[in-house]
Image 1: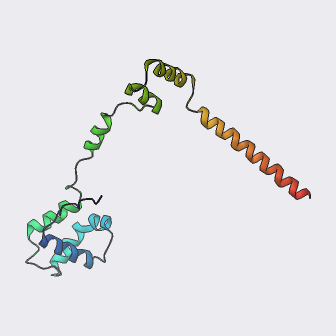
Image 2: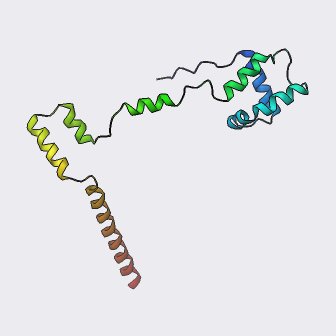
Image 3: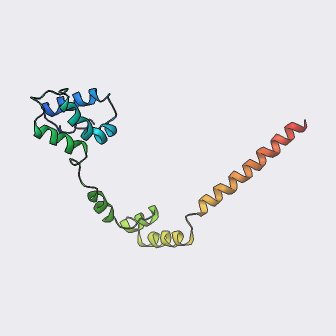
Length: 146
């Protein structure tokens, strides 16, 4: 599946001025250019380095606003979306809540998850890893003795 490309933010004149500023500034990264565009643009214009026909006040304003990130949605949109999801649940809880299990199986699964701690598998893995390390050390010591 091919993603649809993002729409263009800048017009042709704005894009040509942006490329000129980027080249004259030494081709910095986008973040660095965004942080310093308000320094570069007036100086390059004052020294006549930019095409005066293309650098209209609207183009300069669009560059300053676009590079500062004002063309992106506000971060509150993500925060609102994540608040509506509700509290996190386990896989077992989601299966129980979905209603796909018979009532007897759902209650059995609920009892099993209540009796089991989510940290139990981790503890079991840690115990096995500790035993394997001890066996490896013992094997290494036996080889050194021979």
